[in-house]
Amino acid sequence: MQALKVGVVGAGAMGSLFGGHLSAAGHEVWLVDIWAEHMDTIARLGLQIVEPSGDERVVRPRAVTDPQLVGPCDIVLVFVKSYHTKHAAASLAPLLVPSTVVLTLQNGLGNIDVLTEKVPRNQLMAGITGQGANILEPGRIHHAGSGETVIGELDGAVTERLQRLVDAFTGAGLPTSATTNVQGVVWAKLLVNIAINPLTAILRVRNGRLLEIPEAVEIMREAVQEGLAVASRAGVNVPLAVPWAHVLDVAVRTAANRSSMLQDVDRGRRTEIDVLSGAVVGEGSRLGLETPVNLTLARLVRCLEQLGQQR
Image (cartoon, rainbow, N blue to C red; front, side):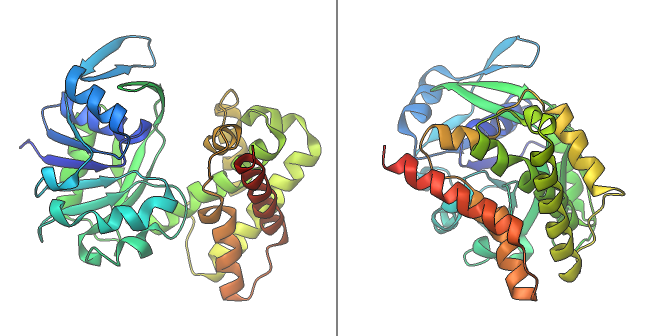
């Protein structure tokens, strides 16, 4: 297939993983991130990727801190933390022409609404990914685990440009499929995140440990029930036959993982609680539904954030 020019805005672990794989597959990739040391190391020495097998390779995407240096792209991948989406959206102009597709694979709800403030809605796509990665040191990442990526047009159409991205990602070793229900797919991942992430951060445990604590399992189940009720009231079709069984399955499969929220709390960083449990609370309030479990989880995580900032 024809090579694409790809801009990756937010080149932390996941942005670097996608950018690195696409670069290795022959696409012109530009990583854009404010972390100067990471960008400088990649620009000088290449991006080192440690694959799940333990094999290590070096790929050479371009890496910059200034989006003005990139120029118009065929596709822009947005991987910044949700609380940086507004700033990222404001920086996209140099990368965009009317044919550019902007794809968010970020966690949670609300990122699309923020992006539409700066990007025409018909240029946006959304999705989720089951890939996992973490930063080992500047210029070096670990591809921690593989999983399917699912992307779709916001209006549910199956378009040529959607299929082109599916083919590009899959051809780069990132198995991807298209969906006609991207909103439902995003909500399905949200249900998993609201069940696992806040409690692992609050209790300071790995994902699987939650399943060994009966009270934790009940809190997880109640958080998911609230999320499903909000999704249903919002008219979202969550594409899971048995959502609670799916959440349990993910917790089992990721038992050894330390959630991103737990890592953020441990490092005294801001979390994405506002677009996870907090988003369920906000959407529930808008629709006239109470969500006390998600509200309490969100409040507790915000307490941990404040304590981390006071260290």
